Amino acid sequence: MKVLTGKAMAELDRIAIEEIGIPRLVLMENAGRSVFQIIQERVSEFAQKKIVIVCGKGNNGGDGLVVARHLMNAGASPQIFVLSLKEELSPDARVNAEIFERSEVSVRYLDDDAQLSELAQVLAHAELVVDAIFGTGFEGAARGLSAQAIELINVSPARVFSIDIPSGVEGDTGYVLGPAVLADVTVTLQLPKLGLFLYPGRGYVGELAIGTVGYPRSLVENFPSSYELVEECCVREHLPERKPDGHKGDFGRVLVIAGSRGMTGAATLAAESALRAGAGLVYLAYPESLSSVIEIKLTEVVKLSLPDSNGALTARSLSAIEQALTHKTVVALGPGLSQSSQIAKLLTELLPQLKIPIVLDADGINNLKNSSVLSKKRLKAPLVLTPHAGELARLLGKTREDIEADRIGIAQQVATELGATLVLKGAPTVTALANGKVFINSSGNSGLATGGSGDVLTGLIVGLIAQGAKPEDAAVAGVYLHGRIADELKTKLGERGMIAGDLVRHLPKVMKEFEC
Image 1 (tube, rainbow, N blue to C red):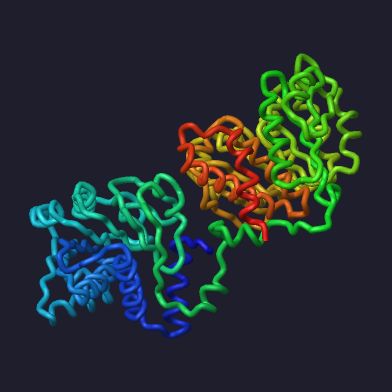
Image 2 (cartoon, rainbow, N blue to C red):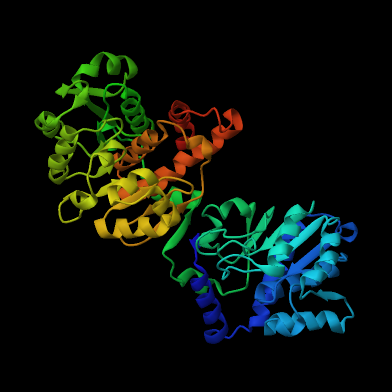
């Protein structure tokens, strides 16, 4: 599903109104009716409910007024509050306000703090509140009357429905710089907005529902967007076909270069995950001194021991790795390698030689001084990077806070500059492609915040590439499947007790669900 910025949504509105000729009032009516229908699906017996509609002066407030009218037609008696004088309303919101006046329905217009006491009293006993204060164009911090109204909504016992976005959350960034409505349900209109998926804003959204505005289908389908929400249907399209008469060679040969003393778990998790994802053959290249541990931990993986020093690979391992690369389909580099000048030298010499897709994770990234070694001018092979915010920050010479403040923008910039696929792990995980497209993942939970989880993801992605998926498709699908595993395990294990081994064990079940 496409995801839009506030600016893009405004342009979609403009095209619908100015070029196609749909009156703005018609779009507002459609939006309000759609929000009402979503409320109706979740709330029964309006007639007896204490309902409060809180509107701002813009078109989001106009949507709220339309919702109020449809609630009244359904037998409800909502109390309607507008946080401005009537003459300050947007033209279309004012039209809907005047409908109530001509119908002799009371609308309370509040323009100073002294009038808030009535709203406070009503909200204290409300059962359902519709938040229509600010829309997706809101930026900065809510102040004055609006800020106080938001705080009153948040202490109300009512179930809260926000129109398009919880008031106080920035539509493009998810920033919350002042008070913001804690919604139980957010009904976003036509297409979701970026800020609904980015923390801290995501924490205010509650259940996300999609309402309709009435744009022509062709307009929505053809409208360009650089952002897409990854859902199950999208993942199915990205998964490689599996021939019924195939043999193990048809499903690829993965080389995982990983592990060091004390970090054998990372290597084994990545290798086993690649197998569980469907790769035909998986080879694990690891420090020779760890053989006794690796031989016990892995049965089905082919083991390739490499020269090491004190339990870690060195630059002397290069020639053995070059031999191991023969006839391989894809290589994973990094899980549990540890950090040293020798490993940094090894990676710097190895990466430009590779001619098969590379998935670079963890210490594969941490050992690099900067991103220049990963430029498309230096690398011959398709590259997938899978850092978390801290790893990407070190690679770019930034802070973790810098990355978290603009997850999508930075991921998009780095992927474009490097000509690579960048999986920026976190909440949410975003996958940026070299062409500027960004996929926002919709699955997963905090159970993934555990040691080894990223190694499982690395194995999952290389396993899909081995079977024929394009690296970018494997990244998008792998991230979703990884999160889907955690979502299914949440019902059995909860989020606190989930560990990486649980993800590997449950991976076959999730893969089976996606088999055609």
